[in-house]
Image (cartoon, rainbow, N blue to C red; front, top):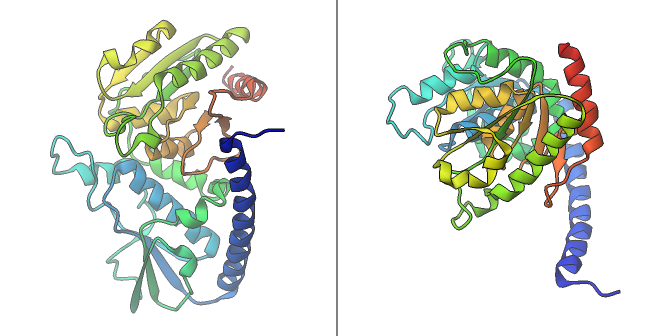
Length: 326
């Protein structure tokens, strides 16, 4: 049997990846045993990033989860500098801090009750932590660990949701329509294009159309009426392929309104974006996941490179979710 070069490379990659993963899991197992046996009182915080709100929020969430698993005290560092402040809003970081509310109920950097005698910066390497009394470990994120075990987010999900709704969201327009299946689709655009340095995060409109069409078909087969909202950036002419699906397209909204609608939907179709990934972690709806650098939860529906997913899984999840609202 003849194989194309692409297939051969994929087979080699899978074999290499299997060996790498086995070694990685062994390293992590030893790390967990060593640190969980330690009785030292250590602290950890997330600090040093300067990218967008989605990326920095996910970084904090990963650090909170890592701290929970490793029994290290999480200390909250508020946002210092966030990208995409196109209006030069002086309160940009403060608004996002209040919006996600991740510092609620947490000790914060500078609190007089903290007994920190030593600070160690590990950048992006949580597996280098060795618990030491009164020591604060400063990391930019803990994805190196958490992306190996994304389902562990269930340990802190209720706490994250409680924090999020602990700050008022009443000032944001909600496009949710009662008695319908509300589908929110996030399409990453703005600084992401098919021909720039972020090309790997770009999803073609045709791919999105195929996914949505299958969702529409399944909803119709179950007799469910659907409300379809698409959230992105750009101009209407950039999304002509979607017109036949008759969606409500919201472009260039304030990101707070967009995010809250993604979280609130019955069905969330993610993009390859930490913005919608973070929304998915807070969502109680059905989540469709397109593969990118952060790994999916088992409860999410995986969409492959051909825009296919398991229709039975979606049908069953939809029946269960809609029966709860009746």
